[in-house]
Length: 205
Ligand code: SAH
Image 1 (cartoon, protein in one colour):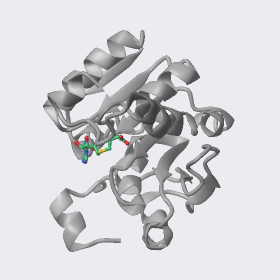
Image 2: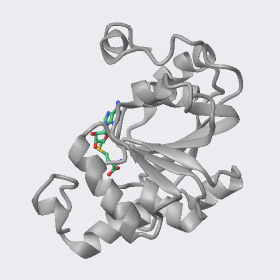
Image 3: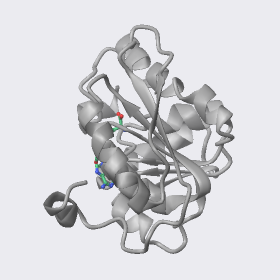
Image 4: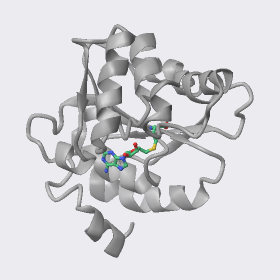
């Protein structure tokens, strides 16, 4: 709430609303991630730390990475990681997901990738599949209008080494339209992915 007056982290201003719409919504993924045996993960486009920070606390994450391309958001994330008691276990990268996914030290090294309100599902798959280890999963927080998103994701899947997207109802009271989508990495991702944003715009899935 204090940082939100200086940098725009969320349009939600009221603490109880923040708790419900951001913290509880983030925690909606805990049981699913546990069922996928994911404790360590990268949160792409973490912004105000959602869903990454609540998840890291709840899952007991040993190795986490919160990614945001905007430097001042990354600085907020570093402060939030500290006060949440996650220092030394969760790191922050002020970088674009595209650059991270082409970094040999990160590529193929993660059992899980999460993302909420960052990009259409096919684009998230293009960013996440390269980061995942074989058998790892992307878990994306999505709203109600999902059909167009899913159609493109189905077209994208085979070329990226991913299985088909699976939609799971998110068990959040008061957010019945929210869904979680799981996409599993089933084969290696070709080295040309992710493409840069301009090429993704010219050739959408
Ligand atoms: N996940 C948070 C924030 C969503 S807003 C939440 O649900 O509340 C989207 C965030 O993703 C922004 O902070 C933006 O800076 C970041 N972002 C968008 N595209 C990105 C990319 N390609 N790489 C890294 N961060 C990105």
